[in-house]
Length: 111
Image 1 (cartoon, rainbow, N blue to C red):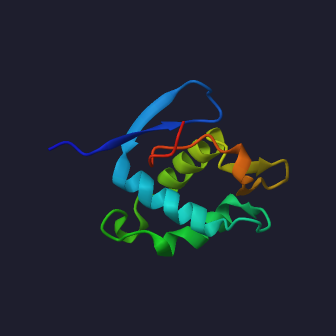
Image 2 (image 1 turned 180 degrees about the horizontal axis):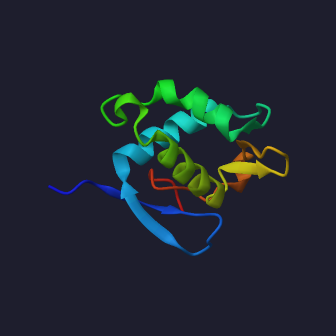
């Protein structure tokens, strides 16, 4: 039986879509959004990854394996969907986007 896939976007290459493992995507998306609470100050990517790693299921990310790649993939997708914002800082920081700017995602929300 094939693994379920979801389509992800990349803010750096508009219009390009890639299909990835749905279970890993959903777990990483939930962990990333939990690491970026609404209304919180923007965080650098390294801090987001440090916060989300403990929330990842060991069954999907044994010992944190591939979590860096998945974090970057989900970050780029959430940016493309308007769920998180990139701030023009050095280092780059990210925060949750206001509710009104969201395009939806592969978890059943309208696109």
